[in-house]
Amino acid sequence: MPDPLLILLAHLAGDYVLQSHWMADEKIQRWWPATVHGFFYTLPHLFLTNSLPALAVIGGTHILLDRTRAAKYIIWAKNQLAPVASRPTWSESADNNGFPQEVPHGLAHALLIVADNTIHLAINVAALYWLG
Image (tube, rainbow, N blue to C red; front, top):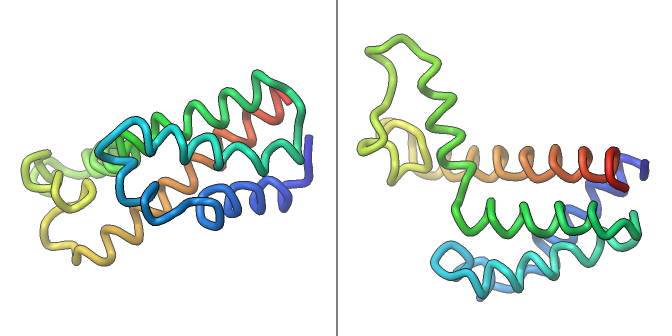
């Protein structure tokens, strides 16, 4: 398996350096920008493996997770692990990245990015470990 630092660098290069503003702005609304971003996201991972199954998992899950903004749903689901009175409903938290409305929007967005990156990195490590 590749060095964990190289896995992190490939993720950061693909998700931030190689992502244009157009991709970032449109990938949540349309599949085409999400797919283009997923392709460019996968490129740095070619330095880590030549395993087509690993690269397909890395790129394919990245497209799906970014297009659906899956981290928002995971955040909402983990917030259901609170006492009933403290659980946000989906309708009150959907516009705040899965967090209750009282969480400042900037903080909710930053935590969404952290959760999203954590999910991507966990999938990448698993794909490179088991398929790479």
